[in-house]
Length: 338
Image (cartoon, rainbow, N blue to C red; front, side, top):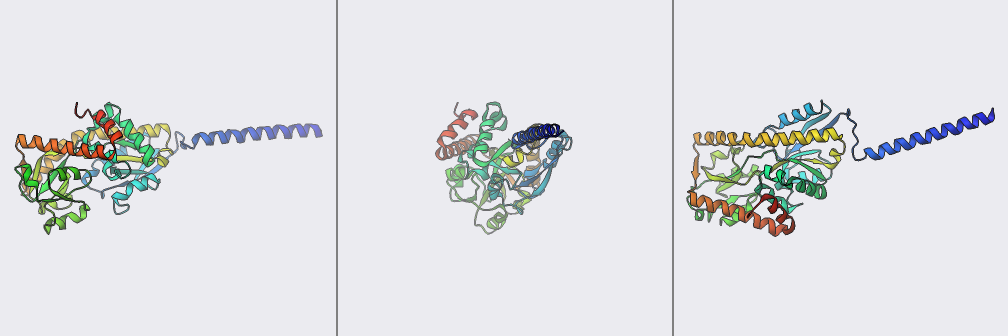
């Protein structure tokens, strides 16, 4: 009887040990992907712009699309705009995992990866078709502990909004223009002075004559009331607005493979939608500004050609100076100079 008990005890110990090993094995596998197919995961999304801003168009629809694709198992909630985390601090926040998802821009991440200045020079469809998207995604994984999901404002461009009418490139000389890193090199190349200031400080600077113009996406200046203090919209527009969606590695690893795939699909579908949306939205926005008293200045064809050549050559020079190796790789993906 005692022998039987000893045998049973030994069997139970073996079963327990096997069970523990199995649990340990499962845990090791899920350390990079903790969610099962039916687990519900809630992620917080933070943006570089306040809720309702024109740079966040379609955000709710994209969030709903993610929910639909995952049968409600992936929930994305609004975390806040710059009032919660300043736009310039989002990169650090996502790198540390404090932020799950960031609706931000490559521009704000240039201090971590200078080559990202080139993204605005390449159409999203071109970047994806040639393998450049995966290259940029890997840059984010290596340098910011994040994944790049998509160009969510594809189709949006930049314009200058000035207090003076422009007919030649020399007319820019002597001006001071508010510029972000996205187009600072272009402003310099035009011979204008440039100052980097927050969007919220720009109205007063224009009103007081501290600056004579500002760059901004080709729609949305009415969000800040700038149409009251600038008179001219300069065309042609230039570059692509590099607003993009990122997810921290910590948040990514909480998702199942199907949830990850759904999120990537939703971001891509939003990218495609944005391309057609912004073509129409920019026209409507500019028409509204003109009705309100602003004037669109179309540069003469020869001046416009020099204007755009200067915009792209100045930007690529800046990229190659900051990161020659990766800059050349992105030039190849863009087909620039071919």
